[in-house]
Image 1 (cartoon, rainbow, N blue to C red):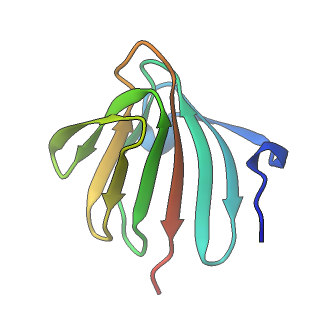
Image 2: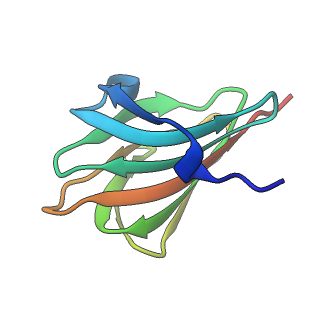
Length: 110
């Protein structure tokens, strides 16, 4: 299967998971996974949330920012991968002056 995110409608998610501003994303969802190609503009964030029944892998494709993971701020840049295991909490934050783009996979754990 090939997923062409450019052919998936762009979602504008205001205050996604309680975050600041908007998250822009092309999302693919099925019974097993959620995948998204996302963008956070300067000052935007995905709010702090805990993964229960899932985990998350985030690959930073361009820009820089930080992740708040288990209470610790960790800087991220293009090429970095952040992993949030099931039972942990995190937030993705664009604290830079440029766009932060990423690809995320959220597999369901059954």
